[in-house]
Amino acid sequence: MKKAQYLALAAALGVSLPSAFANDKVVAGYFADWQYQDQRNPYKVQDIPADQLTHVIYAFLSMCGPHTAASAAVQQQIAKACEGKKPYTAVIVDQASALEVDFGDVDVEVNYQGTLLSSPNLNRVTQN
Image 1 (tube, rainbow, N blue to C red):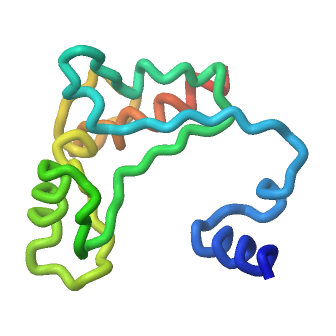
Image 2 (image 1 turned 180 degrees about the horizontal axis):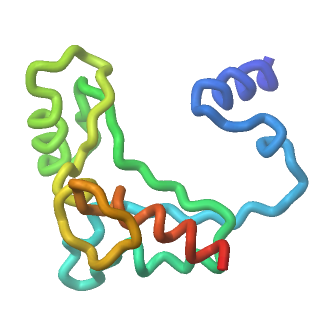
């Protein structure tokens, strides 16, 4: 039963099953897009040691609904993003970080900024 639950979870998360069972080592890091605001230790996409990782876990989406375990600031961001939306609608939590803050030059031209724009550059770094 546990294997069936794992397969269902993997499918729900969009995990490729061959890689879920691969023998290759995974060295992952979690990137919190709000960390750039930490005055003591700011952290941006450019700070990710991409050449030392196989995967970056980057969570910028949430769903509309109660988030009682989250901080008051995050609850406010989600409430604002969910205005007029049905429960369980996916939303970008920190819209400023994901889409608006200028984190520096990138190699693509689009009408938004933020960590979502910086992330493709990270992929190019690891391919060189």
